[in-house]
Length: 165
Image 1 (cartoon, rainbow, N blue to C red):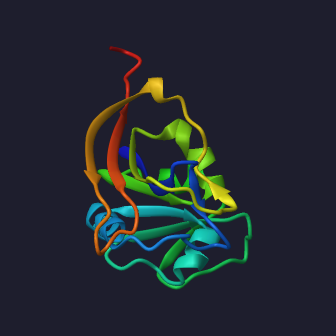
Image 2 (cartoon, rainbow, N blue to C red):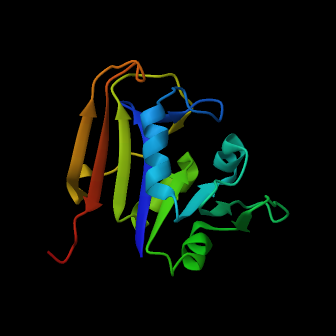
Image 3 (cartoon, helix red, strand yellow):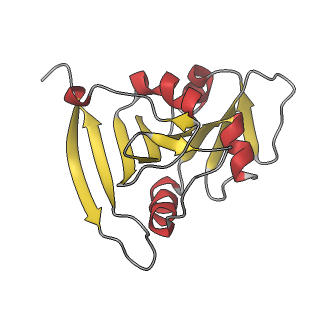
């Protein structure tokens, strides 16, 4: 099983403000959908509530410490480890946020799918810092400002460098 984190962030690692995205970037949403369709997505309660519903075409798993929490079309578990464990038969799982879940998940991650927006936004939620020397850039696509994108941005894929190589 491949454990992947997928996130859009600005150049200061901002990923959200007031439980929503501080930008509109249709290309990023399309990439997110194409990568995650048919896979399990693991998210924290606040991320689920910002989306507002289960993501169609995916196994939705919510991590929360609230034992009574329930969400239509979702499996609710008490820890990230439990979420990963119930997904063990999946080929690839996607951790989709938020900040707390990303902090916990980074140590398990095999891949990082990053959208980096070349701008600075106000935010209250951040992607955790990580040691880039432990990751290899596998692909990068850079996009200029366009009618659909008010800022330049890049799609990046990193894979964790194996300790055995």
